[in-house]
Image (cartoon, rainbow, N blue to C red; front, top):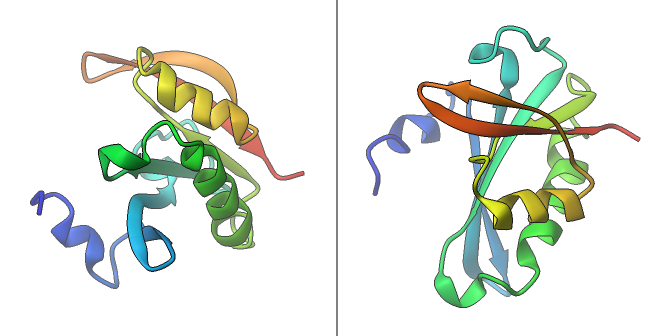
Length: 126
């Protein structure tokens, strides 16, 4: 396992991680945290979501938007602390950006962070 994920599995971690499954088979990972912990210009009511389809055979099947949408609706926006959700894919990652758009996100800006360009995408509670 990637060593950066171990601490995120601790109960007191600010990052909450989940595994997406289809019929008991893991297909991806999702996580969220309060955005203000690393982007201080966003308030505490904003959560950041990150996602990944784990196995190549599940990529390009339309699972990303479904997984993101269900996670945002049932986990993040169900938490009364959050009214907005952002995601920050690499600005050149067209597949991730399209999955987020299909899940109701729109790009609000591009930003350089630690020498990389990211597309900040937002979805508000409807």
